[in-house]
Length: 473
Image 1: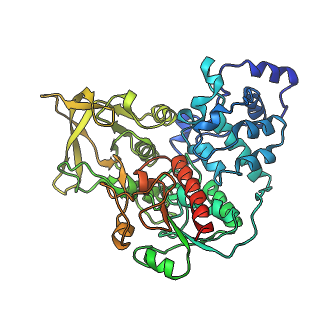
Image 2 (image 1 turned 180 degrees about the vertical axis):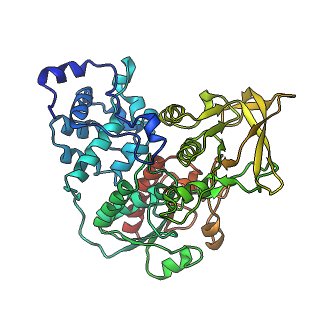
Image 3 (image 1 turned 45 degrees about the horizontal axis):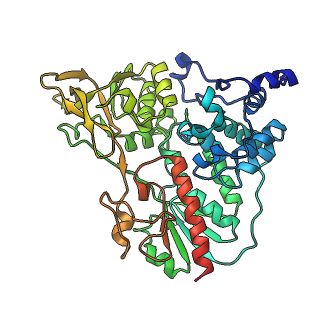
């Protein structure tokens, strides 16, 4: 491969558009679960890095929940020292290959990029992925400096993005860190929730292995609240505990027919497909019945993942059914674009009101009404209003309910003195301190379902607060 010349790099500086991300052809990728976005080549990365102005004010950095030194790592790419770029990222992020793939950079770091004032911002996430992937491909995984062991034990409950980040940060500070994971593999939502075509599981495993290399012990099949309680961990000598168990309890709409055969929660559907390898049936004995037509209720990233999985599993027609307009859809623009390219149909301003079944109680039809947007609700979003007389049916075999998740109440109900919020979340301050001294929490268990990078940011903040707390006990 021929690398860009000095003249080409000079021209790239003035380019107002991002270097496009190479990707699988839409007609081909709907027939496989291979990664859609193929990643930058070295040439692509150098041309895109050349667009970075290296601003001293580092405005992009204020949009990063884990405070990556963005201009610094991009400078290393410009210098063609890609391993150093990866190491710079890992000073504050334990999961760079994951973040480079699934973080909503467009509404975070890239939103503040100066280049975005006249054209498109620098492709920060794409460059982060390039650096992490290059390091892994070279087999040159670098471990940041780790403080001498201090002999203090800390426990992390949950091995999702919040737990992994908190564990990694504390391990670098010299603590003896143990993660307790309820499932049989680590990774949380990174393993069970996000499909292979968006986040390959070998990438997730590589980042988990990196956290292990920092000295973190991960114990699977341990359900805190049942196998052991939080207070028992304290009795075993853990001086501080971080709870990062996420939001894995599915929400339903409460409409007639949700108990019919062929209705899945997005949690069950994606867990069957991803964690239990349903997409490789019968090699893996996890059947996932789809039929010819599938309706996905909701329009967030989870809904897009569910729709695109259904298409790959053989559904001829897949519908996203959402009660607001495209402008209000919470999914990333890139995920919506990919879904459209793959032939997913969008029924917008449409409210499901009933799921009807056949004589054997299998899904037969989704009954909907058309909506119009009224005044904004308490969250600032415009409230949908059903239009009288607009009822119609969509023939479907499968319905996936993807309207959000709530925290599992197991830890909250088995830990005395732990204050909880209205929707079962654990109450914690901005640093993750809960109502129980020595117990911290962060990620979806505190905020409700949010993004991977926000959970990571919460884990990093909590690690700093736990370090401060442990120095004073």
